[in-house]
Figure 1 (tube, helix red, strand yellow):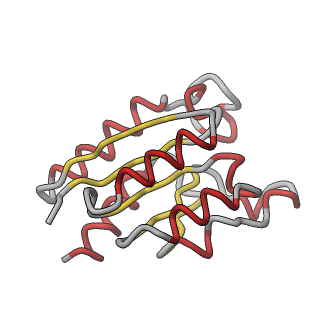
Figure 2: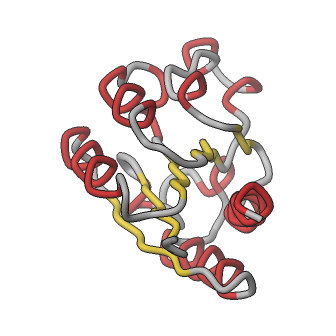
Length: 145
């Protein structure tokens, strides 16, 4: 069995650290990936990370994870609210899927309250800032234990 967690980051997450730090914190995407990788290492797992501002690229990564990765952690960014194709790709993945958000979408603008990703996810971690990346990996490790 694979010990790889696919970590996917959606649109604009490459701007973390600069974009709205009052909402998303001061940590960069590299900081979050490092935290997830360290948490995975404590469980004998590895993280494979990809970021894209393009929906199709993320879908291709999900497809390639099938039969290869143990789990997926995805911060879909704004794709959360309308990317049914990402939902469908995640639904075809045979393993735990954790939806991750730095902020709590339900505490923000009304258009952010609907997630089309959640129905395809095993669970969602939202609103814990940078700590959410470690929480997501811990959840995966427990689900796979």
